Image (tube, rainbow, N blue to C red; front, side, top):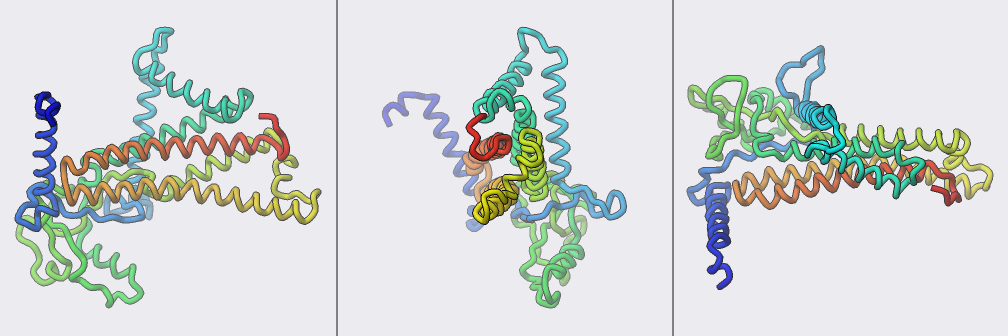
Length: 353
């Protein structure tokens, strides 16, 4: 305590954090129960499937989803960084070129340690690309403001979707469906600070409507982390395992690689082991998919909940946690791709790497 009092800078930082925490506590959903809530916004809807960025299809029945937008932004960012970092490559690298070289050297050395020098240069481009895409899309999804800007789904559409999800549409309890109330009638909407009480139930809306100059509905965000859409991790898992078996076929030949799964030489035991191997390969796609999807989706749900309960400083520790989780999940996905590729490139019983 005495060391804290003797350090004015540290004392000032502690006081500032304390004030921000109190403001967040009083301004969020918890403080709203006692007359606060001046920083809070209505709890954002949480959907498993990706949402379209507009009510109308772009071409035919095709709709662009918010996770597609995140994917394209991540690709553009990675492309720009690669272009800017390599367009004027020199022996004395710039900071950006040096940063890219560190990443490349790290994954190349990692691939060599896992798969050996012979196979490393074949495996590391895919593993590095997977890592960079996953970590970029993960971090884009937790930027402040993501999930708070979008378009408004009308009460009629909300009711239709809720009824369609039930076996009997008459079972829908209109009083349990909350709508958000926004200013204006334009195409864009924002969950603004201090709007925590700007809600109305679907039942209240059908009975009384909303004031002039306002509209009710559910905000559908324009941006959402690509990896919270199960299709993205599944696609990467399929690509990774396809390349793993492609490399296995190239290294061992058709009979050598397929023989791992159709082994008739060792009798019934060999066949049984081969079936287990095949099941294990399918399970890898499933584990790849749900490990990444589950961790990133759960993280975004946690951030939404904390932003609702304790805005500002209450959110900061969880942002740091999700930055770390996003990095670790990207590394695990790419590392397992390397390990599976190395394993597929050697025959059973071989000790050569």
